[in-house]
Structures are given as structure tokens and as C-alpha cells.
Length: 611
Image (cartoon, rainbow, N blue to C red):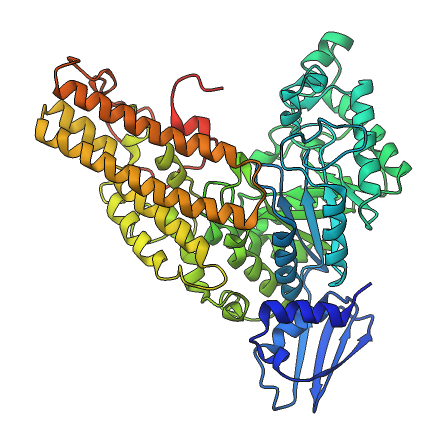
């Protein structure tokens, strides 16, 4: 139940400089059946008419733009009935409860009505002590605190788990290790699997107020091709999938949950690559309470989205959709790309009368980027959904963040590979160049001639905002990342050239550059460490220590090899003897890409075995 006094006080503490919180206004809320929401300010009364109590806060947000010494009238019309967000807590970055509360305040003021918490194994489960062990998992009391806090804004908190694939972290522990079919897919029909799923859902029922649960069930395309095949023989994977899905639905129903799940397994494996072929012949009698979520983070064409939504509607009318706010390609976000995806996806969803639009915030392979770094994407989607205005970028963004939209979105610039930033680029090159090995340098052929200068300029630009009282710490971290990249990005290229030219003076200069790089890594690390511990639990940062520490150790190795070479202790530096080949297979014709998209650290740090 919404607690208007408490919720407004919470918002006042976060956004108290704005006009609404400076006046003593009497608020009257009137329920209406209309999809439109109204504000009528008359003297010292604010009359709100809405059919969705979470819209009260979006309407309060709109008043930030008005003069309270005058009467005014505001009308909002929703394109999509429910705007939701899903935050990934399972990729090492487990947000602190206080961080989630802060995020909820921002979601409330922007008009989001659902907060989905993606957990995988990072929550305490009844009778499963090794589930999420040492991963920073949430205690029952922590999740209850989140649920209760969100309720004062009438935001529904929905648990998102996995009941088939994506539970690879469990494979670390002996009691689960042999209970996998293949890859990260649980062994279907196993007693251990059924017990685990039952315990997960039973635990969540005691925590969450919602009757909805997301059961995952995505990307299990090798289902039935491992231990299951050995045990039972060959069966069509769609038949296995349908059988397992029904079991999970039975368990969920036993605990009073209605289920939603990702939709990709209802189609053949080429579907999400753009093919039209679909397979759902074993899923004709789909549970009427099951919601399928069509997810698409890479497309940006309205007609394409429209076509894919209609394909889903052939299976069931009970669908929702999910776009993406890209924060999973390293330390820097990709807001500009995300905004194009979200705008066109919302438009297609509105056209097809989809009732819920979800924005996913995945944190693949480490979760380095701050959850607040994608605030421009969340703000834009909200404005586009609720307002008929041309400028969805700048509308009230300063009031939200204390920074201009065009300044905040400069966080994306760490991904720049040319002077003119392209909004259509999706890019992980800043992460790739951070971990690209100084001696092997497999990505050295990709580096543009002026990339070092671009990073230096970005660093200077971002540093202008590091004193911002709300989000300056994010700018500080990314400014320092860009600064170290300005040295590191082409250092391997310079080193190889100096070695090939047998230029001893330049090789000695390389040692000075390596020392400077080492120092800049320490400066970046300290800022990143502060950012992580401000927002997130400590568990999971061990991986960052290993990765960043690996760069520092390689710097020591490179300096040692150079000194040994100059002192004639070794006759050559083996790694630098080899000529680099074009990353794209063109041998000595180096292609300089505008962007590369890859979130996997092991693909960046070495070409050697690293599993």
C-alpha cells in the first residue's frame, strides 16, 4: 500500500532542491479508469487523477518544471501501461540495499512501476547452503527490506531466477557439479534439479509480495545433448523443454506464483539472429497464466520489432517485451545506442498494444559499469513513454541528475574510436584495449592512429564533472580509465616498432612509459575501488583485482624483458619477434574497426588457453 507522506519525504531527501518540495501543497488523489493522468494545481491544492498510483510520482516530477506561484494543469498519457526495469545482480556486482533504494527513488520519480531483480544464485535458499556461497548473496531480510521500501512508491518488486540454464556458478561446488546436462544447463528430470527449483521458489514466496516470478528458461539451446542424452537417449530438445517447463510451472503454481519467462526457447536457435523460422509444436497448450518476454537488445528498426512482436502473438496473446540499457561491455555505458533501441522498441510495442515494456540492465562478465551510468537511457525511455514532446533527451534531466543530459551522456565517450561520436555504435573497445596484452598485442592491429589523443581528450572532458555531488564519482572513474588508456592503447605498437628498429634509446623510453602507465593504473584502480564499494557488495571485486593486477604484473614482465635485452642477458624478446597479423584475417592489411562488441575478458587478455 502506498504511503504518500513517507514516499514524498524520501523523494524530498533525494530531489529536495526542486520547487515541489519547497512549497506546502495539499495533495488529493482521485482514482480514474482513464489511461490518462492529470494534475490540476489550484491555489495550494494539487489534485491528481490517475488509475495507477505509481504515476503520482511521475506527475510530481513534471511539476519540477512549473512555477508554484501560479496555477497550472498537467496531462500525461502512457504509451505502455507498465514500464519496468530489470537489474542484473548475478555477474559479480551485487548492489547494496542502500544503492537499490536510491535507484528505486529514481525509478519512482520517472514513473517506473516494476523493479525486477535478477538473482540467479545470489540469494539465500532454504536447505541449499552452497547456493550463492561466497558470492555476496542477499539474505532474506535484505530482500524483504527492498520489497518493503519499493512498496511505499507502489513499485512491484519481481524476482528473476533461472530454472534451466545460466547457473554455471553452481558448477564450482561438488554437490551440484554432476547435476548439469551440458554447458550451464541443469540436468532435466534429476531429483536434485527438482529439489533445487522447489527450494528456490519456496524461499522467494516467503520474501516477495508479488504473485509474479520470472523463471528464466532462456538460451538452453544444447538441452538434451549431454548427460541427458547419455542417460535417456535422444529426444527432441523442444519436447524436453516443454516437459521441464510444465514441471517448473507446477512448482510455481503450488506456491501461488504466475510465471513469466524469456521467449527464445520457443523458437529455433536462429530466431534471435533474425531468421523467421519458429518451432513451438510441443507448446500448443501453453499455460494461460504464462507470460512470454520477447527480448531484443541489438535491433533498432520499428518494422523489425513489429514483425517479431506479431510472431510472438501467434503463440500467445500474453506477451511483454524487453529492450536493453547497455552497461555490460565494460566500465563505460553505451547510452546513445541504447536510446535508439528503446525508442523504436517502445513505438512498436505501443503499436501492438503491449502492456509492459522492460528495460534490462545486464552486467555480463564482471558488472564493471555503475548502474547509474545508464540514467540517460532510463530517463529517455520514461519521457518517450509518458510525454508527447520532441526533446525526450533534455526534459527535466538536470532536475533528475544535477547534470545536463548532453554532459551526462559523455560517459559513453570512453568508447569513442573517432572524434565524431556515432550514436549507432555499440562498442567494447575500451575494455578490449584495457586488457589487450602489451607483448602479444593481438588487438594492436585495430588501433586507430589518433586513438591515444581521443582518450586523452575524453579524460580531460570527463574530469570537468568529477566534483558533481551526485554522480561525480562515476565521471572520475571513467576519466582516469581514459587517461590510462591514452598511454596503454598504442604502447604495444610503439614497443614492437622500437624493438624491430633496434632503437635502444626508444626502448629505454618505453620503460618510462611503462612506469607512467603503472602509476595511472593505480590511480584508476583507487577510483574504481571507491565506486564499487560505494554501490556494491565486496564479493565479486576479487575478479577485478585479478584482472587489473594481471595488467600490472605484465608491466613488470615487459620491463624485465626490455632490461634483460638491453643488458644482453637475452638475445631477443620472443613475443616481439613475431609480426602481427590483421585481427580480421587480412594478414598484413590492417583493418581499423569503428567498433568491436565482445564482453568476454578471456577473449581480450590473451590468445592462449585461459579457461
